[in-house]
Length: 254
Image (cartoon, rainbow, N blue to C red):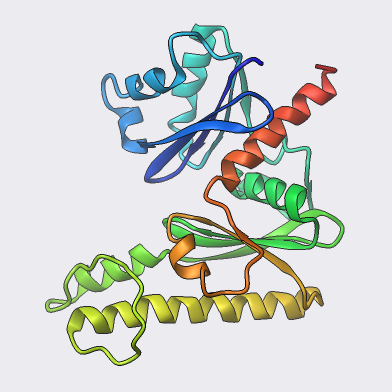
């Protein structure tokens, strides 16, 4: 099967994967900042391999990086697909300004709808935590954006003289016996409480008490492990990209 490279360009990391069209076979994480350094594309080229891929599918929240990837695809003779509100096909879009939707959020919605049906909510624990809602008709209808877990704890460290920078991990107690413990309790338990309350509100608004929730992103396992979620899938965004690439082949009769 022809190899396609899937690329999810985020603010901090670029997640890349190889697919044979049916499943993801290999993945890696690169630094997004490297796209803007001399020779920064070499790590991606090494991942892609010596044989040029048949295609490159990308969703990007860093618009400056996308043309660099498109140029590489052109040089290799690879087909290029950029996911956005105009090109998405496996989920409807019912949103006032579709062009403002993050492409990664559309990819998440595509994968969640395909694997879990509708209605469904995706919670993506990245630099920001995003909630993306697919309604009962199978349309992306909007969501919620809140500060990410690391953003919150880093802000406390940067804006206060005595609070340290902490490494986020789970804690069982609810009364901190040190500054670090107290910060971890506020961050992890408080963050779970925020997510739980927002999901409860979405269930009420959608009138879907059994609304399925899918978690993805860097802190998904930590935060969502003790929440009522249908699945925790770190590759959800890449899977959405794979499905959209697959849909292009179906349309073109491949």
